[in-house]
Length: 281
Image (cartoon, rainbow, N blue to C red; front, top):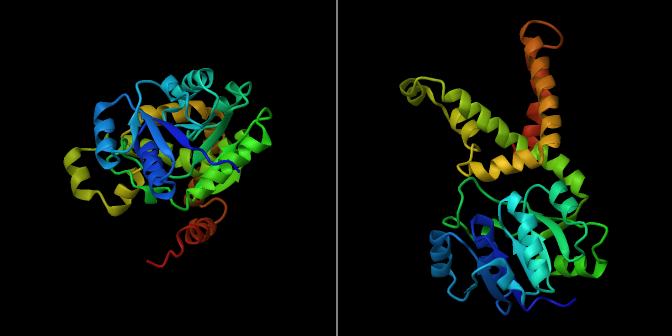
């Protein structure tokens, strides 16, 4: 399987910067070129990885064998078109919503949808570490126009970097991450919004570890999360409807209708224990 000699990265925020660092560590013979419009991001990454070659715009990455788009979801399609028109390489995005993007680029055989299941709440490269991506899953969501050989080529390169690569239909991906990623962030924003109505002094006194844990995913990068939630609106709405039904069931338990509250909590506690290893702490 032909490995790339040169890769491009558009956007060196948390994921883009971590990806560049991972390539530098695991594939040191692969040249890295990058595009980053924000000067502070570019300066931070350049100081950490001086061998990166910086380009002015996405079409300047035309000579690259693979270009990874690590940018907000709404920017993926126009940037992908720009890179595809300029060169002959493969283009892979890293957005956490796939349906709209993959459908919009289904006429582009050299575009492959992707999503590394890693990240963080703070935007920018300032806390980016390659270890954040090591052993992470990288979901690929190919479309019918992709050649099997090119999908396998991307899979091979990602595996070389240490990713566990999974293929998934774009719609199925969006339904799953709506429950595992997008809904938790939406609930965190909603909860933090509720807290914002409290008296600040009282909140400061009575905020507990649970308060901070529940509100932690109300990420500062509201532009990106607004785009994610809007693009995956149908799947997130369906997940939210299911959660509302679950909450109403718990509310009925409070009122003495149906099962006891403790009985309703038991299956949730068991799932949480599996996900977190143990709930004995």
